[in-house]
Image (cartoon, rainbow over all chains, first blue to last red; front, side, top):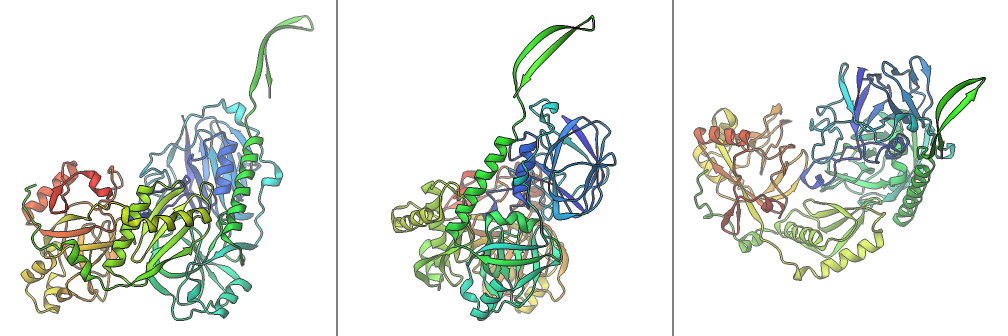
Length: 343
Length: 276
């Protein structure tokens, strides 16, 4: 068990896990991390189980002081992490010591950073999840975003911290975050509510991320997506990544904190493997939507899972194969040493 | 809490059915909503008949134990089925759901239950009671009588955790929303907006005409069953006085309050009933 102190929360830093499932029929949003790829890899790097709670920081990262020695990993968008004033690498596990300060100095690429701690953040589960649902004031740290002075507990990792540090995600698995991105979508469920011109605009024009973008949804602007009659429907369910188009014809991508149901037409849904891309988009970024089939999307999802499994395989902490106690004489002096063969 | 028979005045299944005027599609529409969910759409209107169908299919899915289905979300006229595509692929799921629909007749359906919502009307908790009475040229007593005389179908939950979209309010007490919405409406507030009635599970802003308040908690994230209500069932407002209100509120705070859920004329307070 260790502690970390929030010196400065940055723009918005939240405790999140994979999400609060099972309560959508009761009107409770799923919440959870926006970029599940970076989140999962972060936990893999520090030897955590995949559902462990991490910090999600947007745009401007927090300043954190460690009260104990522990291993952390920073993945996702690059907010320029430094430790005691020196830049530290992302996508690898790092040993930090008591008194060390992690400071993020500025946004360089992407939008959201994930800070995973070996052992995972120790906050109580509310309705089966540690995720913060800020509007409902539950989960995470007292149901809210972090503030200066907050003290977060980190659970004791199963492994010796020294053995967990220095593990790297192989380069080919580290995503880049361009300012123009392609999001693949599956058309529907209300595709028949749009005119041919409307659908053509959606699939051929670029849409820009506006400043109204948060964990609930990303409002985009671009060529109007025309409806046959109106943008209203009798309320139905909203899936993660749904592209909602209200009467004004401008799309909104619904994300982690989205409401469970809504009364606007949904032209398409971003596919699962591309959700991490939109989670890392920021105001001004440009989006091009590309149509794929549900079968193709699910095939890509299986490939993505294979990829994550490969990273997991490449990122296991080294293990002690044999141990020997030796007495060595060096320059006439005798030493008792313990030799561990690792793999 | 005293248990008296309050079944008089509530609708039986047949009467409930006859109220609906919606049209079920001849064939359920299966809509694609991304690679992890699909929507079964049963009609294009808000009706008790369509809602009853949604409830049946929902229960059938829960009973079927189809591997890979993670959550279902019933709404006015459709059912969203969330699934894990790593466990079940779209085509396979589609086939299984279609088969399930064919066999729906053989699925044993428990009859819907009715949750009783004890409500203190008027006074400080019902600041708009006078508006509602005046707008409809009724007395306060008449408004309360009309409001408590029916079971309201819970079409769906949404908007905020545990917020019920209710149907079937008597038009005689319909009242337009406030021109200037309140910035804060306390949890438990019972209100009217046009021809709709509802109850707020959490503090939220809103423009409903408030006629009373319930001391029970429709939503408590730290309770074993965080949300009291479930779509497809009914609620009934029960008039209480201030003394009862205070007593129930205290019992709720202590965790000793026994929620009253009527099922098929009888009564039960078992939590299991909430998962019907």
